[in-house]
Image (cartoon, rainbow, N blue to C red):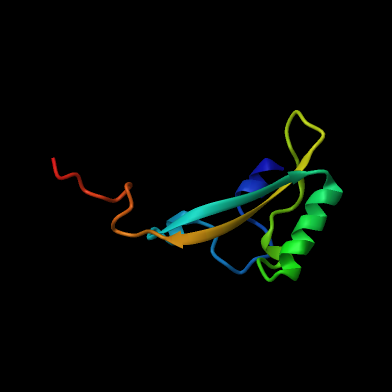
Length: 90
């Protein structure tokens, strides 16, 4: 169940693997709430044009909790000035 969540196997047509896009960094947006709260927030984000409903992972239980969660993965372009790619001048 967790593998399904982490693998990005949702309905989105966007690539979900950083290895498919090494120049891009994944940004994970997580909603944690009751099942109803997660669904409501996903619908709110959809109504605001932030994300399609099928771009979110399936709603899954948070381990050792009575809460539920869903994640949206977006990507940002890595810039040459990012700390992770910047060469040290020392």
